[in-house]
Length: 328
Image (cartoon, rainbow, N blue to C red):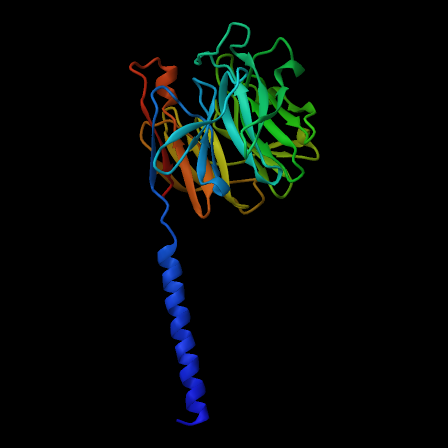
């Protein structure tokens, strides 16, 4: 065999070995489950985050207030708990700062509810992602004493500022990385009728604004970080009735979970930086009260909370809750 033939044979061998290696790597990558079932009677989780470094989902609870961790086999254990977690709602995993942020409220459905806090509590708790140790607890409702409050969801910008929606007052709070709280936006146009949920899901867009869902009338808002009072309603022919959780899958695509009567996930797109939006896909979930989403690599998971059953006083309490992969 001449030298040219030897070189060609070597190239062919290397190509074959590389292909075999790629096949082995593909085979070695474990498939993510479509469904994770949590068997824990009366848990009623509302918030959801995936912690890739620790291979777990984090879930909140309307009833116990505790933040739990859930493995792929459905095993639930407590991640963080303390007496001030009356009811926990939205969760945000702030990876750059190794912390878990939790919106705290009191809808009157938990074992820790009191007349002093029911319908009046809005706070943000922060926990060390690794140890579960509490780092901070920031009272938000105290910025507007005498009003109704319900801290619902959390978003964090690139500088570590957290933004929290208040469902019972037309307010978005800002908590800087040092824990200083302020009213970021307060506007009567964001108010809901008494007894109804208003501001709900919130996400930070890397172009420097927030996208916010309003539950009672199914609207979306775009709120610039540099001038929040100049917020606009995102124009859309679709009404996202009972809009709850939001997740940006890319800069121009947003997932919106709706519960109540709709129980539908909407995939929404924009071509003009969220001045307008149109529906690009829908997914009916059934009567499971989907609340929010989390990313797991390229997959998206949704939380089936059954909170509607809790608020309706259903007995016996729901015993199983599901973290479901979203597939349109």
